[in-house]
Each structure stands twice: as structure tokens, then as C-alpha cells.
Amino acid sequence: MNSEFSKAVVRKGLLCAAAALFASGCTPGLKGDRITRELSAEVQRSDRQSAESRTLSRLAAMERSLNDFIQAEGRIPKRIEELMPKYLADIPEAELGLRGHKDAAAVTFYGPEIISEGRINGAKLQDSGGWGYVYNDRQVILFVDCVHKMMSGKLWYEARGVY
View: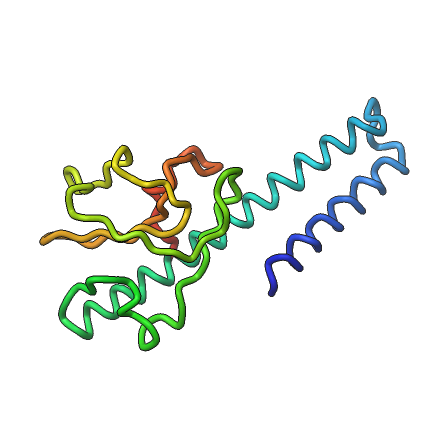
């Protein structure tokens, strides 16, 4: 389903539900501007949560494709684009739902120096809002290239795709 269409459906549903509650008197103390602000905030939270969910699903799909490539080819790809089209149809957009980050399908390749004790050193990231890719002789990490927090409080670059 088209993500813009999904967002519109969610907004319409929330607005209809709020209007029904308001008309039925089930919103004591909520008046015009206040209910509009609260509804707007709820729609924004819902949009961000949906964007985060789509991004984690896309990350998981890319991680599976990367694993399939490594298993079949017996090597680590130097660039994610090597997975296309056999293992990955295209590089999907990362949707973070954050101000200052546009949806991006770009992949930033990092050198192994950003890996410290098996983890990514966030201080060395470009914070592109797209995807990040790094590997060394022991591990391969595909991640969201963002130093901001998800709604859960976890940093984006530490997120792993959900299988």
C-alpha cells in the first residue's frame, strides 16, 4: 500500500474518531483549538511510528539479502549495490519521521575505523538519514545512518532489522 495513502487513511480515521467523540460529549473539557492540537500531535506520533516500522522492516529485508549474498557468494560485498538485482531489487528509502532528515535511499560506506569493540561509534557518523554500511575482518554491519533516537529511545544507528 502506498505510504502516503496509508498516512491519509490514518489521519482520516483519527479525525473521524475525534469528531465522533467531540460530538457525543465524550471529551469533557476539550474545546476547539485544544482538541485540534491534541489530534495533530497524535497524527504526528502515528506517522512517525509508521515510518519507523517501515524502516525497520526494510532494514530487516536488506539484512536478509546481505546474508543471502554472503552465503551464496562466499564473500562480503564491497558495496550494498552488489546485491542488486539478484538479492535485492532496489535500495529502499529509510523513513525516520524526524525533522531535518528526508526519506533517503542512499547508502554511505564507512571504513572499519567506525567499529569499536564490535559496535558502531556514533561520533564518527555523517548522520545522513539514509543507510550506513561497514565491514571489517570479523563483521558486517548494515544500519540506519542517524544519530538521533527512535521513539523507543534507542539510537537509530544501533537498531537492527526485525525478523
